[in-house]
Length: 234
Ligand SMILES: Nc1ncnc2c1ncn2[C@@H]1O[C@H](COP(=O)(O)OP(=O)(O)O)[C@@H](O)[C@H]1O
Ligand SMILES: [Mg+2]
Image (cartoon, rainbow, N blue to C red; front, side, top):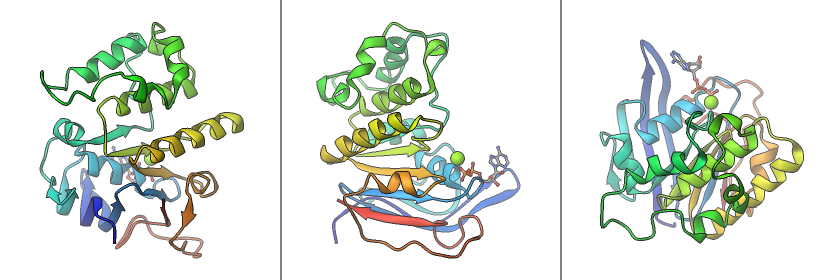
């Protein structure tokens, strides 16, 4: 079995008094693309926020490359190599795209990893971003915001990218462009975890299918394992 980039072991996460995740386990191997598929409200974003450290895990374990990161702050997880493109993109509307990237660069300590920053490799996924570097976040289209969010995550040289609903709200032709981008990221050896509400689109990102999709039409939100889930390996 390939080494695990990321492993969740029976995590339980609450939002206020409400328990959202119950005993969720998940494994993403090196270079693998995993699709976490479930209806709205199933707990996909909660799972990703738990991995990123934006929500505290009440119990269970989150491991990145065999290191226990369950209690590590979010910015340290980003520096370790967990990239995140949130559902709402998290772009500062009053800042230009370039300034949005600068904020990410402040995370990197001086003399850190030389591969971090906006090099050709980062822009190779979405070269079109270089055409609107001076535009303010407010004036970007939905698709452009998603491109900026993914490019920004790539600038920290991640080993794994967490993409929350990357295809949501995109026109079909743009979805095809984003699927190409996910394939390009995988080809760089970066693992990908995609959270999506619909099965068809993330399935187009895989090279071959190795998991099974439960057929039951209604499932409880993220209990004992991750909702409806498909596993793909490259
Ligand atoms: N801030 C919040 N406070 C309380 N409950 C929340 C909050 N955000 C989401 N939830 C609830 O948590 C559950 C899972 O939400 P979420 O992880 O966003 O699901 P998904 O991403 O699969 O649509 C939903 O039932 C939702 O209503
Ligand atoms: Mg969500």
